[in-house]
Length: 279
Image 1 (cartoon, rainbow, N blue to C red):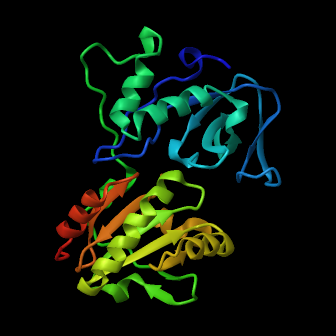
Image 2: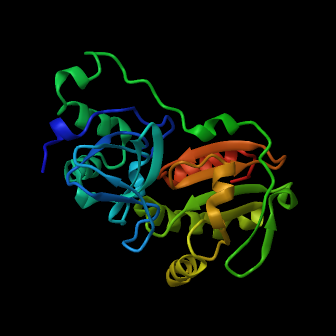
């Protein structure tokens, strides 16, 4: 395994609110010739591109790994950017990066410190200079009217965002393979059970197959609705680039909070309070 010193370069800092995801923290390098970049994390998925040894892959969001054996990445191919998934085992630095990520306990500032302290001097930030925060793409939605959409949940009930005006809505974008999502789900369930009567509508949004989402939800006894976002159109509408992402919408239909990554129950409650939910 190539060392972290030669295989991982710090590309950006982290997102800037509370507990964060680890978006855009690193690059990975292909270890073997003829590695396939696939459109899904599956040996049976269609191949997007054939990668060569030494090619750099920019990690789009590190928490795409979670419990999955693949990273979500992008790579430059003939002047164009192609995106897909690649096995952790086929990229140099994956093990070192995962160890740093575990040591950091999802605190991006610690992660940046862990990685940059082990990089060659020329790739480190200047001594004493703070790394600039990187705002999540959806941060620009704050204070803006949330775009309307209509989806059905796993029980085939229809939900339209505009029809929920007057309530505080939390959209939680998640996936079954996402480790931080799994950690956060019990907190969301507790909030749903406690606060629904006070005007909270908590909706999970999942872009996987209905079967996978249903098996996970029913197997864990979660009762808040999970909307089926086939094609991830609503995720794109809300500029979701990492999961979990929680979007809190106030009673007037404006985006009140945009939270990326794993968050404590207190942080989630504070976001709901800012949207006007009595706690």
